[in-house]
Each structure stands twice: as structure tokens, then as C-alpha cells.
Image: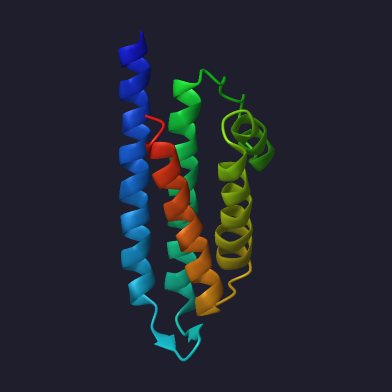
Length: 134
């Protein structure tokens, strides 16, 4: 049973890693002009993919920690509540990644290079921290 959980968690991490790599490639397609991304379309796609990578990594840890799946579409509250039981520092990183990548970058289309890079840094931090828990 434990091997099944570990395999499922590893699959989630592999997907998270793939999504973050794709997000970085997409972000490179968004040409920078000074301190802003000119092509907001690519920047938004990159932010969305990076955020999905974060959620996939968190899902993997939830499998390992036997945190039950939410019914229907999981909300950010589901992820926050579950991660609060796993690691508070990673929860802080999740809040930052959610705010920057999902809300500011993806939905609002804020094209500030420094802000978006900060969101990507937090996504990488989350994957690194959670991967250590495997």
C-alpha cells in the first residue's frame, strides 16, 4: 500500500516538474522590454502552467500524507488547509505563488518581470521542499 502511495506521489511530482519546465519555456517566448513582458499571452500561459505545477506537487504530498481528496473541483482553501497540516513554511510559499502566478499573472495579466520572476521562484521552492518529503 505504501508503495502505491509513493508511486502516485512520484507521478504527481513528475507532472509538476514537467509543468514547471514547460512554464519556463513559455515565459521565454514572452519578449521582455525593460522591466515588463511585452507578450502578455505567453506570460499568462506560463503563469498558469507554473501554478498547476505547484498544485500537482501539493497533490503528491497529500497522497503521501493520506489527506483525502476534495469532492468536486478543489479550491485554494482545500490546498491551504491540507498544507497547513504538512508544513507552514510551504503554506506561506503557496500563498505567494497563488497570489502572483494565479491571480496577478494569469488572471490580471500583470506583466512586471520582477513580480512574475518572484512567483516562479516560489514555485521552484515549493517543488524543492515537497520533493524532499518523498
